Image (cartoon, rainbow, N blue to C red; front, side, top):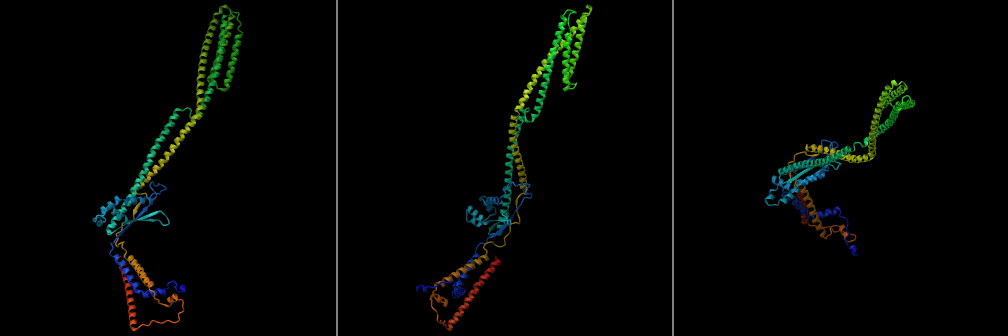
Length: 529
């Protein structure tokens, strides 16, 4: 039964809200008007703040980055943040405050410089503008707020110049530092490359004969030396054979001279000469098969054959004269002495030749051993030269890479100094504000109206909630679950009816005055800023 007597809460209808406003109209209109008036009226007593701003465009380099890569920080947002921190540093801001005489009232009251710096940082506003559909910055807005429009314009211009100049300064310093960095490393690479070149030069000077490039030359020289050695040995053998031959002829001559006249058998001497002559001719045939007639050995062998034939003829003539009369014995003896002297002279020359040939063979053998040693050292020298060349190639590649980067960095630095790289450009001069940025009277007028609505609604709703009277049939049904059989209408007198009409008219007049005042205040706020 108790649960049945408790009121059932349902959603509030428009008729109920209208009934509440009609009954609590004064509780709604008075807070609405005074709430609006308080907020809107106070806005006219606030100090006006003017805001001057300008847009700084981020211009791309005039030369494509593919042709001349940039040598500065490509992250514009990081660089802009660094510039902003430098500009908003305590030293810079105090200098601007002193030079432009900012915040004179605060300085007259003895406000600390640090507090003025904090105040100025709040008055500076930087807004980044990105390209549509991209994260790349295309421009940014710089603005400053002050009580005087001319001061706001001057400070904005000063800040804009600082941004442009500081960006150029930072880019120039970074570009110069990058170029200096490459120049220092390039100098070290140049010294290292010179050291590698010197090592290779010294190595080649020390091993000029057994370098890998001399392999074919050494092989050709070794082959020639071996051929020359073979020829010299053949000549030595022939010289030794000639020595034996000359010694045999000399022996025959001496035997002939010691024998009694007319009793010497000389048939063997011509026979031995003929045999030696045949051997020489055989050697000549063998040499002629390999060399031409102009070859020194061929010519020498021909001369030796001619000499042998001459000696043979002389020996034959000497034998014939020994068998003749005694009156003619003196002539062959003299001829034999002459032939013997010639043979001894030729034997001596032959011995000298043998000695020369042996010395030549010794020298050739030493050279052959030397070149064989060079060929044996060739793989070692090749490996050593490969190690030196590898270090040289690495140093050269490093030097070429640094030289390329240094030249590109120098071009980028030159572009930066000429302001042809990425740079800032002010689109328009800082604006001179004609209307204050704060307070926005029209905006505050709307805020005051909202505040009045909230206060009026809260007061009207609160009084309605505290009132426990029943105003209609629906409220009664919600309170008591019984069927209403009949309703007794309110009975009013003529005076009460007159007072009700006057009250309604007064409420309508008050409501009209309130909304007319709000509209007039809004119009005033719009036209006067």
